[in-house]
Image (cartoon, rainbow, N blue to C red; front, side):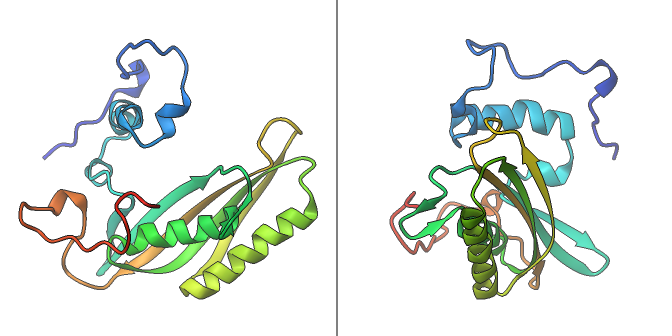
Length: 193
């Protein structure tokens, strides 16, 4: 079976014309505009069976091993909030995305986009928090990248984390496998995250 690949040489933006000529905050909010952006631009441009699953992680087979692979970016303001900070959120969010596939999280990467002028005290506080969160989750941060941008070109600190986990069971967990009558277990109120 031949995969359908978009012709990127003659590529034109597949996102339908709308009232928007520029990206809006709501395109990243997880709602309808986010879904449309992902499905009509990114899935179309990068089309493959793994991406089409549209889960929070890709499920990959490498040799005999099944892996989960995810990435997420964190752009919260304020950097520090009751109960945590951007660093702890980045580690725990990525670990959670891996765990939701039934994978045992193993390794993370951490990329930092730092605005010139961020205090070293704040940066150290975030990095140490990430280290504690990784230790508590049983993962290691094994690679990363750091970029510093001019003052005013970022909102203090953005973090991207990617994670790899080992899937040690034979079934596939994902929203596409839900069936009528399935029982879902929630540990808190729905949408409280």
